[in-house]
Image (cartoon, rainbow, N blue to C red; front, side, top):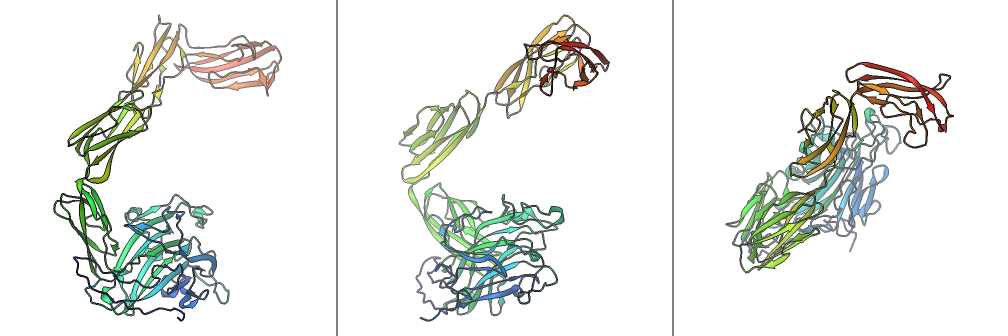
Length: 638
């Protein structure tokens, strides 16, 4: 056998009468990269300095030549004029670092074993140079372009016999916020000698409208990556930064119909382009099915009554979708898309899918059988509940369809953990008492249906509520005292102070207290209660001095010994302390503070000072606004 090139192949198909069933037909040889190489594909790289399109193709690797000049037996090629792999065959499973999706996907029940990766995170740097002369080229440097093409000889046959190809793509790109034609993109192009088949040739890029249209981007399946770009920004406002502006789109399937081109040659091209200015990268994965026999519905062909079935078809560019389900079945969602969710009814029947665009209309049907038994069903209460620490919750299930049940949880509960009944409805209850938030799972089975149903009850536990009412304090007669209670509760709390004596409002977190003559002290109990009835308590003591606001200062202290080891002022009725300062006999400042409760420990730079007399001065503002100025001496005793 000679060197393979672009082979003209013919497939003989035998028509097998069947309702809506597509026929098995051979796909192009190595059309799905099953040899692990690019054999039979043409590849190219280039630079889009002048825009995307044929003019951007600067290096071509022909399908009739062996590697490294051609694609026969080749597995990879470098970016244009840059030593970074820009085209490579993927045959091993892994995860994309930006999108965390599988490199080789399983979509709609079909497992792809091979894929092609077009592009890299490389961006052009500096001014572009002519590849022959090496001289600088005027204008913008442009981005990298890479692509592969396959000339498909569509087998002859009747126009009623479908011939389709289905590919999947996933992509990673930076947000360039350029006009759409200059954005980083990937695309599929299907063309004939007469030109491009527009309805089968979509481009995938982030939409912009004076900036990124993030709402539309998300609606189109894109999402931002948590991984920042590996390329430092060259924008003046972000120079040198590694921005988090990478977006990804996970695997999506697309189909196109070549039935109308039987006996003709069409070209399939996959391409990934950086932005036209060159500063933002794009790379994409493409994979092809090895089935070309028309539209195929993916999903279970044997289900239980009451089960929610998921059925899907590859999308068709610019298509409208329509589904039909058996009588008595209920469409839950997706009737106008390529993914259907349906609840099975009491009788088996056909599921039919149709997708139509300006090029074609495709149809497939799938007969779905039923198991003898229906899917279990139950009415549960409460599905989610919240209890206090050391509390309990009663979990209730009315099983309307089923014969067996089992309760499972890592948390403690009382009641029957499992049982069986000859007929429904029946009731099963447990009492859950977890120490922390825990899921309780009810597993249901029904005779004749092998599919279990799991209902999850989440019991959220409010942890012990710790209340912080503030520190014990000392005030003078008629001095307003502003309380501020808080708690560690994650839920909103209501507060109650008891007794209410002296408080302007005992039912808030921050009441104001004021005390007259005849009260020496009072201790308040503060209770914080949340919306679930969970509560915590704490106490705070207030002492009342029968004196005017003043600053009291001791006349001696003993550093490092007992309770009198720090020399500090005692502020009663003082709203703010402007300063408290300590001097030696020569007038040198040894200590200064404006914080009440702070004092001097008798040391300078960690060295305990000698026993002697020291001098101090203090200035404060009492709660009425009056200035209080005090000074005196103190004896340091060792």
